[in-house]
Image 1: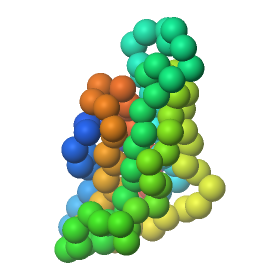
Image 2 (image 1 turned 30 degrees about the horizontal axis):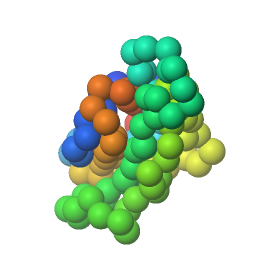
Image 3 (image 1 turned 90 degrees about the vertical axis):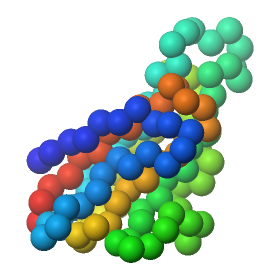
Length: 112
């Protein structure tokens, strides 16, 4: 099993790109709101994010969005692990955060 970790930007952030000649099964994706302070009120530090599963050669678009503007409070972690996803050569997982520096993402995968 392998993992990739990224700091999520407010532009397209590639969490994983499958290299030539490989197939990966995604086992888990974790997105953590690492807001650096203890929130004073319930809305402070909240960040939304989108997640896309993009087929090789296609652009990131609404058609490949699997999470849309998910609201993640400060200090919380979202787990995407109920479905196993197989990606082919050139396919990628792209995440976009609303605020820079608030989110980190980890993906776990196996070569199949």
